[in-house]
Length: 276
Image (cartoon, rainbow, N blue to C red; front, side, top):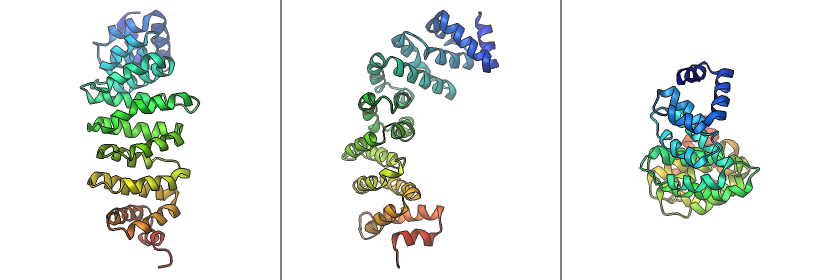
């Protein structure tokens, strides 16, 4: 097939797209990806997808590192998915390479590490939870907005659903940090905890709430409001304590205001002042 024929089949989508992926993978996915890389956006998206099927993970990751910072959002997403596929199939080879990506000058490449790690989170592979969290750990202090959102998404949408107890224990450890960006991630991630962990999350939030940084305290208030939706009694009891604490009082008031956006203000106050 010529490159024009390949791109034509890719643009048609559906079974045509599946056929071209199968054909190119059988020929030489790595070679085809390298040829497609300088092409238009559709070519780069196809290249990223093909690289996830390569039997040569080290070479494939060399190209994916470039695609992870592509100007096209969907190419970046395809690169992350391909990286996740490679990590799942070739964990021992891919893992140290992704570790090196964490210091890449591009925040989009650093962000990709978090999302690729999340793509490999699998409750059936408990042996991988510790190395995956170690891969993620250094990125928590990264100030780049792209990295912040990537780490937060990975923790809430991938790691917590796959490894709730392990992630909670790791967040508890991270909550002892003096780095406000790490504390921001802890508070943000706890908002995605399953309801059965709500009471334990509140204990960790007590410590994080003592941060002097406004943006950390703001995310604690948002997280309390999220936890209140599933565990109103536990959060209500915690807020009663905070309303009597000078340091945590402003956060408690902000949380009550946020809770009041989803229910009547009187119901929110009642949860904090039963019998008043």
